Image (cartoon, rainbow, N blue to C red; front, side, top):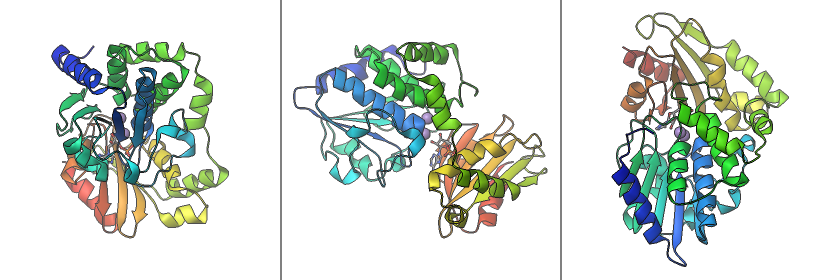
Length: 332
Ligand code: AMP
Ligand code: MN
Ligand code: MN
């Protein structure tokens, strides 16, 4: 187990949680805006673990509209409440996969109003908020941190908890392919799979299912991709831009754009992949990936975002060409 979180930190957080779980306690769990598999999976898996411990006043939330993309449907969605309905002064507040308070939107002020707050995360760029901060930058996913804490609290992984934690693990490790896919990752996966979850079905739903409209949309966006061999100190950068008009033309929801980054980051001639997903007029959710030659989290943090050395993101404003130029200028 990584030493990023000391035994004292684990025990202090676990003791604070046990202390907060009095009968009738209000417990709020939150994850980052526009949640991915790790954010949702670790939060909903943890919520079901707390339910096993007898907690009843459970709520889960994230900023923005409460829509969960089809591939990320999982057990525990019934705990989700819109941010406006979340407990104002919870006895216990836990956050998942959020590297900064801004990623929690309006839910963030519970860090001040909650009696106890515990932050579970794995971003090196985590700004260190929350009364109890459990951040392990060597963990491949926040679900590893969540699983360790659940175990310490005496929760046994049932099939529903396992499905959530497995979805979290499989998305953030790219199906056990990325760096940080340690023996502990596989050991946790083995324990989760042993509960009887449908591994093949989960993988098909998350990675291998796409509507025909999305297939056509991918073809067009990839057809416009550009390669800049001189960028990133000559290591190369590949860029692609997906617009709202692309989505409209193919009648697709915004989440289908998330998988596009995996289709461009395989480009052999580029260390860096940069995908712009249009959110509004002059507004882009930017995904950055490196194969190892560049620290894209530095670029993302400099542009107001965050992430990991090899996978990061930020919100870009202006014309697509300007946003790409800003990224290029920082890849030095
Ligand atoms: P994505 O490209 O959306 O898959 O995100 C890759 C990584 O960057 C994840 O670890 C995210 O938490 C992080 N990230 C993405 N967008 C942002 C943002 N706007 N602000 C902070 N971190 C971000
Ligand atoms: Mn995430
Ligand atoms: Mn994560």
